[in-house]
Image (cartoon, rainbow, N blue to C red; front, side):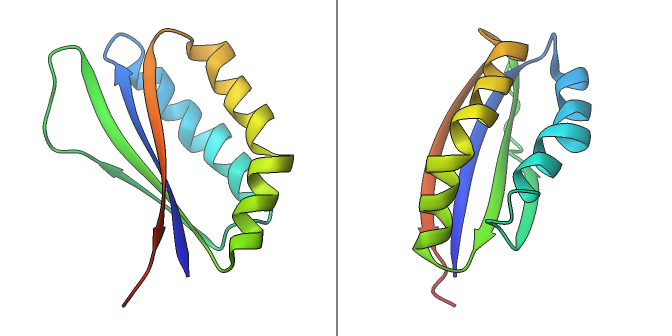
Length: 100
């Protein structure tokens, strides 16, 4: 099993709206791709003056799942976020392997 981790820092001026949008729209859209078996949203406890940071963890079974997601779904989903919150967030993505 593997985790596709997306860490996002969001500007405090749009935080509340963005959080609702993530819960109600973006995360369900990601899960509806069928590429992932579970999702978690966790908040980084270190608060920053200009915003909040979250980690979104999407669990998948095989590398083919993430390759399918990145090729067929990620470009549109990432463009949707950028269109709605351009300049208000920073994100980076990592792939993790679950060992135990």
